[in-house]
Image 1 (tube, each protein chain N blue to C red):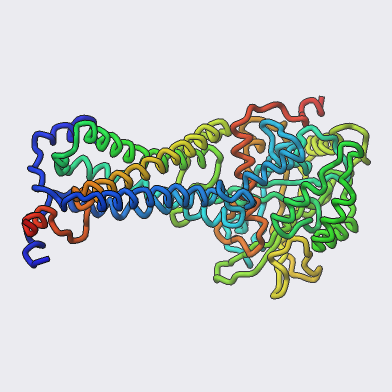
Image 2 (image 1 turned 135 degrees about the horizontal axis):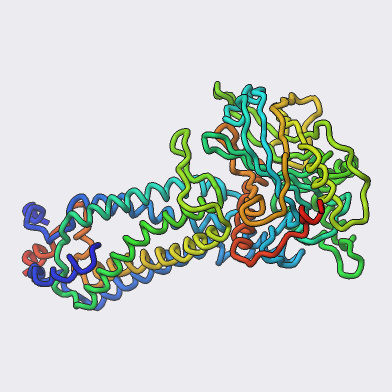
Length: 195
Length: 372
């Protein structure tokens, strides 16, 4: 609108590092879920998709661990005052669930490959070591976990995006902008301008 | 992420809510809810489509595995194809000649341990051995750098199908009929009319009678791959193993497991050996069609010796629990435009997952019983 609207005190946001990590990781996770569900149904591209799925899983695990450290070392912006205690609980627990799944899902993939004695991911001339004993029973266990966690991760991701869109587009409380790495107009200022 | 640390107390530190956002209107709210619903529909629909659930006519690895179960029945804990088998162990001793075309560590001079598996084609784990049944040899060779080369070869000189779709159709067309125990001839004829490549391949296979047993049989990789050497030059290649100084295999007997029992006894006497031959294709040689042989004159490299030094009844921890996925390749061997290995990889993975989750029962082939 007018120039000073961009410099006015903005609504509280997540720490800069949190926002960068969030948006770097989001496309990785979406692509990974899509590759995972596509490859199990693909007769012609299974090995090629798997060749992306494995290293991308390792990358997501690394990013998830960095995010966990970042999360523990940075303060969160306060909740929106309009959020009820129940909504706050739901937000906190869904965040916990997402972090847990983003760490545990790559680990179950790594473990099931280890149990099947399969090569994991090549780092230059070396292979990533196995983290589970060679056993078809252990493979079966982690393979089922990988399925269950994939569905949970997809459901949590879907709920997360729907909730943020609902807040941003229906309640119009600017929830999304707390995670923005782009310039946003302060909703507060908007109001002032209008009145 | 630490439970109960950050998430409860910010309530006290709440900043005053901005006086309020853009005013809520009914129209705006409806459009917003429409956007949320659209996202959810595209998101869930997109994933369901990608996963094959909205495409019942698309051939997927699970549907391929279903067809094996439909033709052969479901046999818990066993492979969907090549269900009857025997575990083996041994070594590959490379003479270094393969390094001329392929930089894989396995072709450097030296020795690498291997896990093998002799098998009969088909999904019946207790079928009676027959001289003309397809015989398989799966190998997993692991070099010191941790890289693996897995291959599942058979004794036919060419494969019966050039595409996964053809294989899928043929499986059903060649299903033995309850009355005769043979495929429905009309159905098979109709299939061969539609698939001249399979008719041609069957002709070649018929001209190459199988050897007497597992021990004196060659095994062919059949699919084409790409070899790359240290200089970065890439050539198309196929491979076979050719028996070296094979034992005399007794003629076919009436025993239900005579093929397996013969190889068990042969290995008990002395190690069995095969030469690993790499065949190098030339421009124009088909790399995407395993039903067509390459000319006999193609360059052939003797890369070393496969030795099978012991065999074991299939059980936990040995070849029973290996998926001989032909796309597990060391650096230096890559997939070509052959459509079969990718499909085999997807279907083998599905078969492996299914049998991993099922209860196991003992193998029909028992080493101790044979030698006692």
